[in-house]
Image (tube, rainbow, N blue to C red; front, side, top):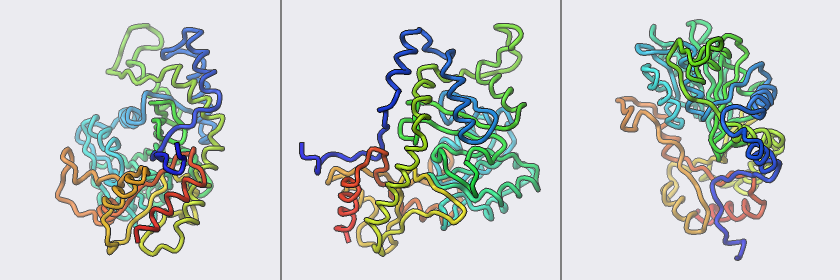
Length: 368
């Protein structure tokens, strides 16, 4: 096959380290379910990476968010402010508790949650804020943390897309009261499916671990004092995670190098806005994301179709949650709506070669 014509996917995992060795050890030993040495090792490695005391591995990123909300006591009648420009799981996790997600707009500069708009949406029923580090760029957290202190509101970071990103020198996942990650197959590191919560709060750590395993009493087996959940991760998944953690710094460096190559290849195209990186941030560019100019003669969807015709995958930005059927609301959130309409995610896998990026950049240049 001519490699110059090969299909370039939006993402794919790199599993060329110790993944097969560690997973095979689980199979040989029989420790394939939710007990086994790799779970605790994965939890501690990721907690250390984020600079926090506790990591609690769970079945996926959505269950991580749900557990965080339940552990904080979020329930029916409460409101939780979330960005409208994010994957719908963030809002779904709020709805699972019976609480109401309240949607806020994005900043034009970082594409993340706008603290000024969040402030306007705080009510006496607001119990939590979930900032999402969209596409790998950290949220400007200080204004949100200050707002939370003023009103006694919990802050849960949704860091599903931002493993290793830095906010003013601190890792995301160390800034909120409790914080959620995803390890789906397209994330910077993967366990296939899987998620994890990070926290420095000992009581929250104990509460989440309790709820994760059916709320079974640690003193009396098969005795349950609360309604709990089967949100456990398996030893097989954690074994993958440990192998991936051995290379996480390498993967982040690859992501940043890919962004640099894209920036060089797309520089000077006035019909494209390249992804932001604020002076106080270190983005991990989970997705290399661009915006088309409003007056570009080809629609966003036509650009994506033309890329696909050249065997290049892409994705649109998230649709704002407030325009989707389960959450449709009579809201005007103009920045998020504009970003969603013009945004494209380009192939961003750590397996990309320089030739791949040149090919993608060339295809975009020829569309002018």
